[in-house]
Length: 104
Image 1 (cartoon, rainbow, N blue to C red):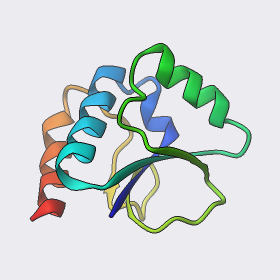
Image 2: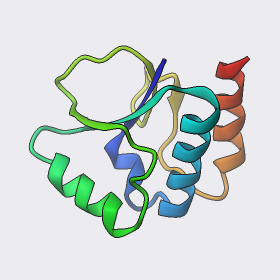
Image 3: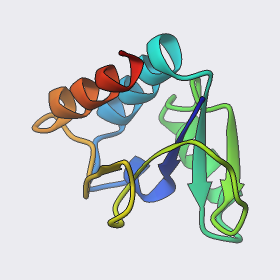
Image 4: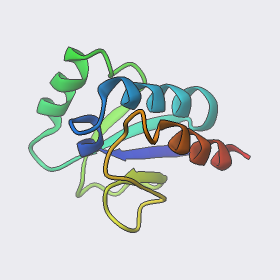
């Protein structure tokens, strides 16, 4: 199974260290792949952002938002399996708990 994360969750107001923690947990314990979903024309920008801050280790692929890929989703829009406006210290435990429930 794949986890699809909206690219906006990797940039402020999200905390890059918390974003990396989420992808580390997801890739290590729950999902086969972690995919970042980017608006068309922004994949290079997001990849460079992730590499600059060392948060690219557990990202398997970057896809455009118009590409269809089945999987569990985390994003800012209603309809995502996990809906949040940011990944930060104040909600990191909650996000990890929700991911842990997927594993069970």
